[in-house]
Image 1 (cartoon, rainbow, N blue to C red):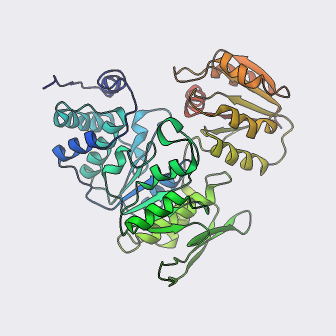
Image 2 (cartoon, rainbow, N blue to C red):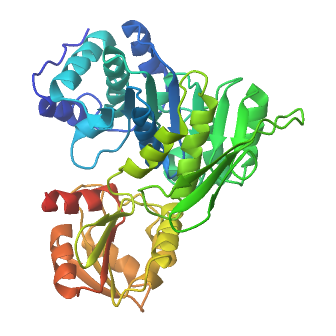
Image 3 (cartoon, rainbow, N blue to C red):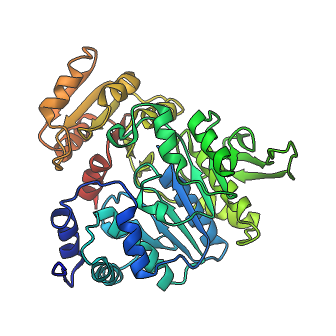
Length: 433
């Protein structure tokens, strides 16, 4: 048996997980983490919602957390990655749990794992569920880290699962086609239980898997819908259509626009409301709590407008699907005198497609290397921008310098958008705190 690691500080544990046992690597597969779960006898003690998808996962989790909290329930939420502190990943009622709780959970996992090597995210997932059980939460909202079928979250059976969107990302792990990605995300479905799909297009492999295991697939535009009526109001409608041809009872609400901004937020909110409908018998929620939750929801870094002038927007979008959403959201804004981008991306992302989608939305780009080894360096970024002669590009050694240059360049009626990666946004938000 290996010597067990022991530490009293969270920073020591995170250093161990990032650089020690598994060297920070991604290793998909459920056998190792499932064996440790069994040794811990770890079972959720309440309904579980699992949220997968290419984009929008975090927003759906935020809506569910805020609405259930407004309804008086105690909510445990697992999300990833974090922006500023690891603790953000494990939250109760929307508040990050303390270092001591995480350290205690990590120590239990370390004792139980014996000679089984676990990844950073696997430790994170097991710790979250153990903490939620100890905190006696009424509902768990678990965000998938990567894919679905082989993600550590999938060792827990979802009472309701969500697949927000299906698009290309993490191709090295999930495949190079939409159908391959759909198959991986379909793995979170469970037999006889509802799965909510937040897009109208249904990939064939996803649909086939739902039929194979007899999952109840609820589809945007078919079983539920969202329509903006005015600048301040939208309508949500849920009317499930069953495989035997029967149509369920219609639920229809007029609701305030959610506090989260961006072109796809109504879709995300509608997915969350459909989860509520599916769990209504177990966790009743009044429409007043829904309205309150929509108004009060917060989700840092998702098309977030920072206070003051010039207008500054931070967005963690980092793939083509997110770039299309960002483009749509920017086009809905009033015209800015000058449009500036502060930008960097990780090396394993599809930067060329992202630039193709967004290059005409900015007059000037301020690019820089990220502080992580996974990021593109400034010379690599310059090579990608060289393909677009129309782009005016300024290069810097780090994102903070790029942001300060953009801020100096911008007038009150201009707009600065900081985007391209969680790391890009995090480095700016850290400098602002």
